[in-house]
Image: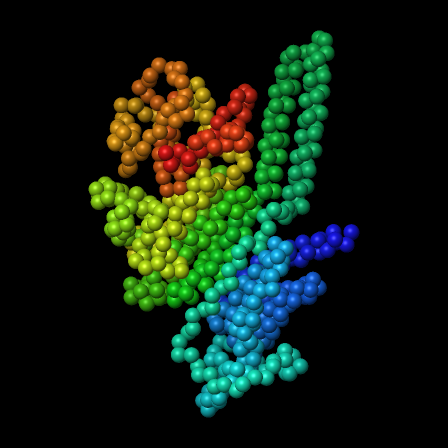
Length: 596
């Protein structure tokens, strides 16, 4: 009984900490932009105070020590004793990262005796910093003699935007141990920000999901409707079994039942899907801190704008898009946006703009990462690709601009001459391509030199039930995920060309490689050869290709069924589904086919 209670307390603690830390990150980034927001500072103080209190109840000493020191600084910030500066926010954010790591240790059941002294040492000078006050606006500012600075009295630069307050009384301030007096000269230039403590696991636990009570009520209502229709179906079947049953009346009643069942099951399906949906903001909320850290490392000024964070998608998709978005944001900061001096020289605003947006479009979610930076220099991209032996000069000459954009996704490609902590090894964009392919998503690049770039991700809302295009190949029916279908064409096979043993089709401004599903899946031909066939143009991440099929059957929503371990590794097949007539249709895997 006690063990169960202790486990419940621990789970409640971890859940509460995860929530508080998520809010804390957002508020810390926001308060740096609005240092005069006293209410926000008070809210941050309460967050840290709550972490400290809950840690005290559970007896987690390391958490108590770190949060106590951070709380002392926040107490001074909210009272106006010291100003909100980038330097003080650096150490508070570092302390927050350490708290996250300690909570993750507890979550894994592996509470370690981690070294926290270095972080606490960085917090100490701000706790000991002498309180400051500003003169009245009407009074002239007098220059006072520069005092000797000790670790207990580090005078901050006076900012006219910081509210004037009086020093806190000894009863309000936390006691500070006395130390050896040292004269500390003011820094000549801004010191680099401290390295963030890396958390090995995300704090959010996606094994559970919170559901709005209204959604549960709607789900229960639909289940009730389904029960009513089931009873109606049983009654119709019972009436049908009786002698002398009215055949005409049966057909009419059964037709009504079919329509009603279709409506109820569709609504029920929608409600269940909604329960799995979570806001994309769950991923977006960690990016302000990443942008702040990276932009400080690069000495760039960036205004991050987030749009559509309330847009919902399936949690299975949310779990997979974090890494690609981090790489794309870092790419925009490192390669896309210029330094303030470069922007000013080219007539741009000193502060660069990075826009992260999400929106629903049909059965897809469109995520865009857009910057107003230098854009993609296709000439430089082409030269680098040749230098690294990724393409030949002959290939480069025949490439369209879109194909040159796609070169940045090649493994090992980078425009950097020297690798750094952020980029240069040619793995970032390759990771983006790999993860988006796993989701049956698409990547599109728009860029103009000197104006900026936009990376557009098109992702399915869910991976469990999909909209699909049913196609026939010599009598066999296959399902192609509609999220991967770009267009369909009816083509005369005389328009096909053979280049290097590969069938291709000239489609507008590009050469489209073709794959015949009949050959890939070894389907026995049953029809006489025909001049005309259908081509389904599909896309997977940055690749495009055409699938040659006999005819198009139509669009249908299908539930993905596993083929089991024995048939799990069939190349080009992602699973199966059952059609309305009871036949099994295999679901084509566009990702695997694009690698053929």
